[in-house]
Length: 113
Image 1 (tube, rainbow, N blue to C red):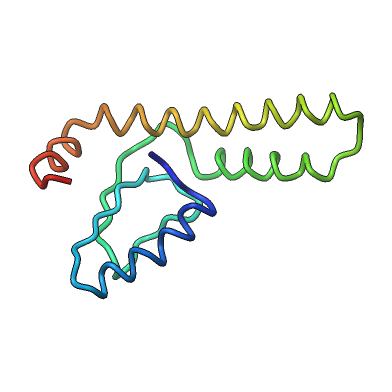
Image 2: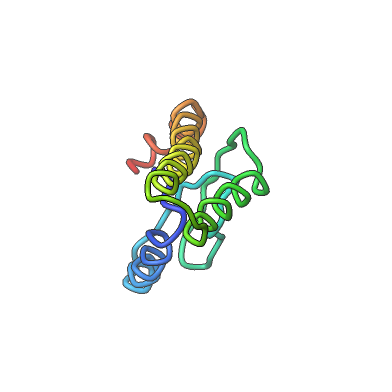
C-alpha cells in the first residue's frame, strides 16, 4: 500500500535501523512518488502506474491550498472531501497496478516477501 508522505518519512528512519542491524530491506513503490526515493538502506522494487509525477503533485498542492481558502464551513468541507477522494484515487490506482504486475508479484512470492 502506497505510503507516500509523512508515513514514508517516518518509515524511512526505521528501515535504516533495520539495515544497520543486518536485515535485507526491500521497498515496493510505484514509479511515480513524491517522497519515496532510492537509498543505500534498501533495495527498491518499482512498478508502473497510469499517472505522472506532475499530475500527482498538482493534486496534492491543490489539496494543501484548500486550507488557506475562505468560505463557509460547508463549502470548505466539500472541497476537502473532493480533494481527499481524488488523492485516494491515486492510492487505489497504485494498489491495482501493483496487484496486476505479475512479474513483481512473482518476485515477492518467490522471495517470501
